[in-house]
Amino acid sequence: MNNTVGQKIRNFRKRAGKSQFDLELDIEASPGSISRIESGEVNPTKRH
Image (tube, rainbow, N blue to C red; front, top):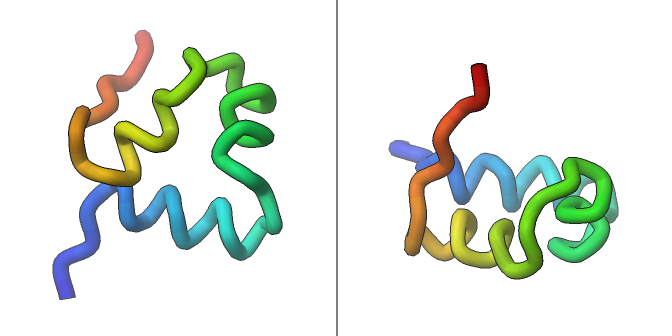
């Protein structure tokens, strides 16, 4: 089974009982960014 980053984020988020919006607030992400990552529209980059 090949989980994408988006699938892994969705699984962890749901286990934590968080909405996409709640997670965005927690990590100070742009509105809609979690949706785009989970759907595979964008691939997140890591900060240095």
